[in-house]
Length: 212
Image (cartoon, rainbow, N blue to C red; front, side):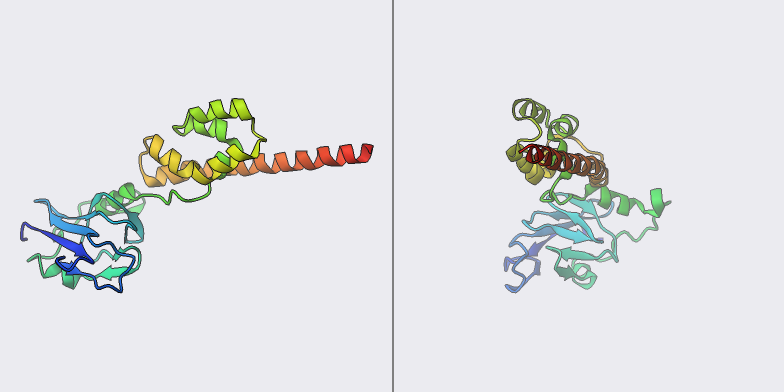
């Protein structure tokens, strides 16, 4: 295999050139290189890359021949294009053993390197932002909750909008899967607490309305 690095993007000097119709791809979207052991894909883009339906953004991960590479999740790079620059198929050696849940080592690396969608609404942060923040790397959220309380709507809404990004950036996670699993558990409790609060407010309003 040739020891070299190739570039991918909308810039016309890219080795794999994407024409102007690929508007969601970046000018310098990614590179593919051989690290002495295997082919590596490094993303530099704004909109990321889907590799085997796993989002990879601003990091390098190993790839094998047959992996589906979708720039910005929309534009597929074929292995015929990659093979023009590398004299042998990627990772010709057979994979040794399977990881957990039947995943190959390359698939495990992909999943561990994946970046979650940090724009998602976070129900755990919305309903329990003080307690949630204490366990998700945002300890200062607890101080906010002491000052405003849980029923003051503005902090709840702000943490609901930005909580996923704050948790991902402020705490070290084993993988994107670990992060998403933890946030899903918090979401259940956040929804429960939100429902309890709504029912309580309705009950209080009905109680005072009955007294009038």
